Length: 189
Ligand SMILES: NC(=O)c1ccc[n+]([C@@H]2O[C@H](COP(=O)([O-])OP(=O)(O)OC[C@H]3O[C@@H](n4cnc5c(N)ncnc54)[C@H](O)[C@@H]3O)[C@@H](O)[C@H]2O)c1
Image (tube, rainbow, N blue to C red):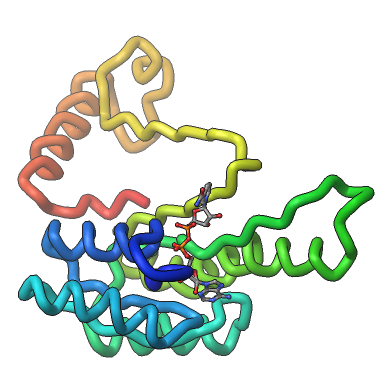
């Protein structure tokens, strides 16, 4: 979302869209500005990669729903949602007008909520997907790390009713690791 560029040259959305395509992704470029979206898409096509573009205001629920369903129709699936749209609004709480505060909330926050609201059900159904949300400079860095299945002391204290003993549980966990590493989805979400 926001895969055009706010002006001539390279903004982050355009750069990310082209970078995804260079890694083999089919990219639906979505932007409020049709010309900017088309430009990004054309760059991707000129590099013999696959892309399409569409316009949407990502603060509008109807637009976002449509873009999600059109993308699934065109490409069959959505593996990655990249939320790039953002807008700087300067000023502290006491300085900023209510109108500009609301605009910042809509463009910076509601857009991310809407895009995830309509993409996540599709990703859950497919049991896979990745979401990248670009924050503003005012954002706080938060990292989440999902470890794989590791035989640490912790797991021996939590044998579920599913297993009769530790050995059985460890064997099942190890088997699912090798199953997973061969590219099969275990259905974890
Ligand atoms: N440029 C910076 O210094 C900087 C610093 C920190 C964070 N960021 C964040 O990085 C992201 C990209 O910034 P950038 O400066 O590279 O801009 P960019 O060039 O990627 O432009 C953003 C794009 O979003 C589109 N857009 C704006 N409102 C939209 C809407 N309602 N619906 C659909 N599309 C819309 C614009 O048309 C534009 O093409 C933003 O979220 C920004 O807040 C930028």
